[in-house]
Length: 206
Image 1 (cartoon, rainbow, N blue to C red):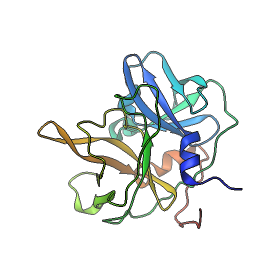
Image 2: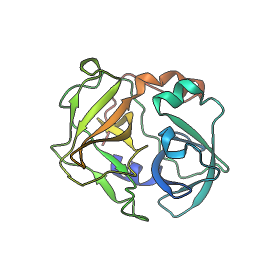
Image 3: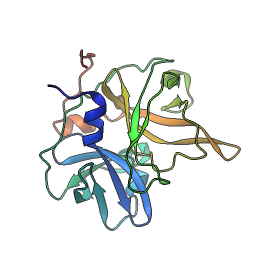
């Protein structure tokens, strides 16, 4: 029986520890993790922990140059490949306003739990790339917290596919108002160079 998107996220998404800082990343192959660059920037030793409590170390991939650092994108290469990776399609599409989205991450207030899935019918895209002053996508969410620190590097899921990466939060009066994400289209070339399949067709999945 094929796994649901939630089961795949449970397996693929990992906690990233960089000294005293915590963030999120997710597998895009058996040995590669996609995350936000600021999560691991300046870190001497990068530790990643998966759902099964397996802890591995990662290093910044040599293809991450200034262009991708400026986009806040990083690829980590694990010191050992894993056999539990569950493929989630990576989709390069125009992300529509009001599209429903979900994600999964490791918030800093929950040290060991990755059970915080941002899933609600009111989670919607609040702005298209073409409508913004930058390449960020604005994400509205129903689950209101004072901070979403630690969710940086989480996958942006629409139609059961990875369509981008969550980068950071938009604060207003000290509270998180929106999350900001980056579409796959801005670093699709990097994924292709790594032999990661990127499609532009929505697949029928559970």
